[in-house]
Structure formats: C-alpha cells, structure tokens
Length: 270
Image (cartoon, rainbow, N blue to C red; front, side):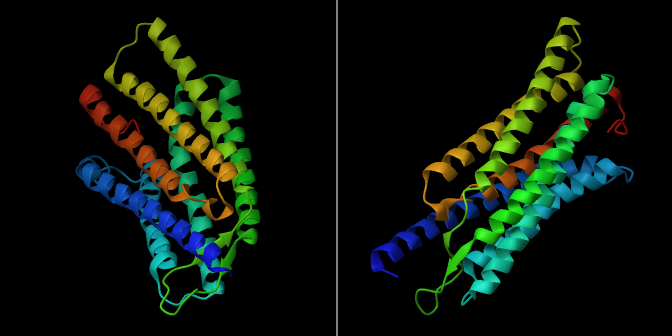
C-alpha cells in the first residue's frame, strides 16, 4: 500500500476512534446523570414489557462499547477477527436501536391508539422499516474490507472500505422519524386546541417532538457524510446515533414516570 494512502487511512481511523470514544463517554455521562432516576423510578416497579424494554435499551449499548473498544484498541487483530467484531457490533446496533425505537414508537402509538389507521399502520410501518434495516446491515457487513496491520504493534482494525448502502439505513430512519414526528405534532396541536395542559401530556409531546427532531437531524448528517466522505468514514456516526437512540428512548420512560408520579401519584401508567 502506498505510504500516502496508508497515512490518510491512519488519519481517518484516528478520527473514527475519537468519534466513537466521545460517543461512549456521552453514554456513560448520561448514565451517571440519570442513574438516580432509574433507581427510584424503574428498579422498584413491577416487571413488565416496558421495564424490560427500558433495561434492554439502557444496557445493551454498554456491551456495544466493549466491542468498539476491542476493534479499536486490541493489538494484533486479524482481518477475520475484525470482521467478526464489526458483525457483532452491527447486529448489536440493530437490536439495541430497535429496543430504543420501540419505546419512542409506543409513546406515539399511545397518543393515537383510538385512531384505527395509526393503531395498525404505525406497527406495520415500524416492522417494515426494521426488516429492511436488517437486510441493509447484512449487505453492508459483507462489503467491509480491512487492511493488514501496517506495522508491528498496530492496535485495532484498519477499515479500508465499505458500501455506501448504509446511507439507505439512515434514510429509512429519517423517513420513520419524520412520520412519527408529524404524528406527534398533529396530536399535540389538537391537544392544545382542547386546552389540555397537564404536566404529563406536556412532557409526552415536548419530549416526543424534540427527540424525533434530534434523531432526524442525526440521520440526515449520517446520510450526508456517507455520500460525501471517503468510504472508510461510512459508519463514522453509527456509534453516536446508537448512543443517542438509547439515551432518548430511556429518558422518555424516566421523564414520563417522573411527571406521572408528580401529577397522579402513580407510576403504574407506564
């Protein structure tokens, strides 16, 4: 491999490492900020689907972070080991992101559940998006290419390419988040006309709209980066998006339970 190309790849790899480590630091930081809420609102609650979803969305990113640190910093990794690590990371991403998106989607579904179109259409939309996402990730993982360690003692994997098909995943998430954002906005506007101003409903709509905007913007940036930057940057923001989905999904439950207890004196509504 020419020295100039190798030098560029190493620079890109370093940027990739910085971004992923920063994303993981954000995950741990938010965990520390919200741990007291989790202890008081989640741990004492009865076991149910929402508690299980919360714990899965909350803690699977920490498993992801171990895999990320492995393929970033482990010494003398073979190309086969790199591929296996990235495959594990990819499928953990899909599973964990799905758990977080279920939480966000359930909130939208809950405020529209009396509408038969949304009641059945939103779950169907969700399933279609995530089945397609699984297909895209499977195809993307087959296109990943890794270089041999460029020098003795090199740590981590050196990615030299991957298909831009990954941008379709971000586009799908953008479309899904746009749809749910519109649904939340419509319901919020109708609620305002009915002059319903409880803290609980304000929290549901405020967090819903704000969080979907965050995820839409992040997916849009991902699409732009995949299309404009070199192929070894193809999943530059994947870890950040994974972390943000977990943070926002878990904060939805924590905020709603916190407001619900203040307003209703009961945490069993979610």
